[in-house]
Length: 415
Image (cartoon, rainbow, N blue to C red; front, side, top):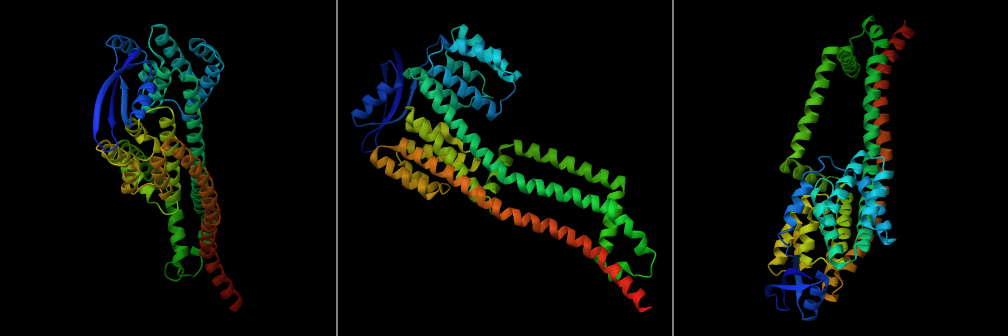
């Protein structure tokens, strides 16, 4: 038996708190719901004996993070083997022997050591905050408390797989213009360094006023001289490196990261993709937490960072505060003014029908499909746009070289 502290809201919106003993949190939630209460938050009251165990785990905390792909593989393997009935320590030992990732091997060794010392699995995960976020740890804690860890890990694996799929779609939408832009810059440099010097002596050796009559050609000649000058190129390279590291430093700050996410959220063409991907990740994580028995308010507090966008994160934190004060979830989501209308409507229906977890699961599935469609439409628009950009570059060089040559041909023909 464990002791839990909970916070509830009755049918008229009045909030209350209390404590109770039970084998898991689900039994308390079901009992309170049967009495007509909405459970806003519930947490197990930790025993004092767990503190020394947590301090043991701190000694082996990993300083490196783990990619979403590695975390996805780890969670899926763990879920599959737990569902097969394999003991947790044996699972970690087998995974450690077969893993080729040094980070994953170190993580598995640390988790195995903590479990052998008597630490709970969720507490062992909580030690490595750079790898397992609060949502992951609390899901594992819910699974332990309910005795349903295999199913919880399966849901976590599915959630991470969906997140990785969305990230791949977003990256694929951005990869094409990035590649074409880099290619265009390399092509421009090659034309300036290798092509223009072949024609510059010809233009300078004839009686043509390049600077006055052919400003485009004159610009290309000066750009070619600058591209061949080591000092100029070194200065530009140094400036580029400085701006790169300055940008990274600014983005590490909360203000810089928020500004970047705000720009992405309002960026032309990409704003819809950012909104849909954030909505899909938020709905998937929130629905999963609710399905696993996490109380509404606690789920909102955990799901804030799941959207991957700090603009939405701040709005979710505000929604959580307002819901804790007695507001309806759907109304607060609508007032946040960052969530799609469909999500708000489904949340309202879910509140009335008492099926919020299922509704958010449907919302997540819908917007995951919408992300695929949006990526396809963006790619369809970007491909001709990029071709026009490359064609425009070639056209500039052709005109810059061809116009003086045609003038020379005309003079020679006239003579």
